[in-house]
Length: 377
Image 1 (cartoon, rainbow, N blue to C red):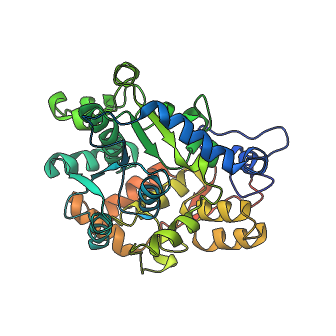
Image 2 (cartoon, rainbow, N blue to C red):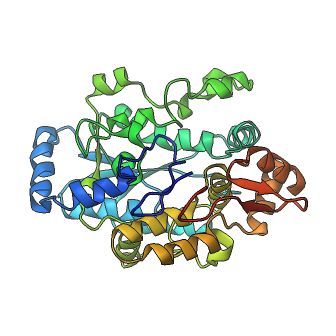
């Protein structure tokens, strides 16, 4: 395990790699491509590009945006409408009642009150719960099936409604380091289909688990042929914003009615309480991700702040040592109650997925680092 020489990104992030100087892709993007960008030219670039997709007389919407009502989707919707002058259709695939937070409901309602047309859809809660449980026990990732459904919902509806432009947020290749998703240009998002969650054979694990094929359509990301036939283009908006960041997006959205989390960072690993606001069990997955790869939610916050020059690497190390992988027992208990398992069964499954090269499981069940934050192994 090695860390980026500039930020605190470890080389354990899937589909990422460091250059010969030991710098991660996200830092390379920020300090080279982004630093040299002419942001007025980029705005003109997207405006010129969109001229080829002008709305036809029989069309009601120019584009489609997947939303949760959170910091990123709220700002995206406002920017697309108020800066680009487009009429977007917002699409929200909501969680079952047991999982959805009141905060999440309020934030989607806020988008409606801001004047947007919003399609809210929900899948069979019984099937959702079974898939969630299967994902946890098969992959120690309860969110695998829900991620598939959330990612698939937007292009599926774009195809159904004949909408050719999909706006997405950050480019996970350039801004996070998942290089499998990099497209032909910095804003081309059509390679999202290569993300591990939705890439070829994404449904195989569910079919092998006995789920009926006719119930899996909402979880299936459209294939390239469907994209090409419908003429769909995904555009990463993060490519066009100089100030794209977790903090800036949250601040902007809060000024426009966003309701954020009031729990502590010790319970959530969420430094500023602004991520994944529509449900709380993602905190478990961030903790599990930490035990698998050595980085969690705090790492994403810290690395962005270091690149933006608002935090030193030393301060970032302190925060990671204190809070990365944090998750309250209460969230674990409510999750276990939902999928009808004991807390002991939960930890048995998690312990089986801990990266033994990075962590040591003590006799009392606690998990301790073998690596030194900021330095590695």
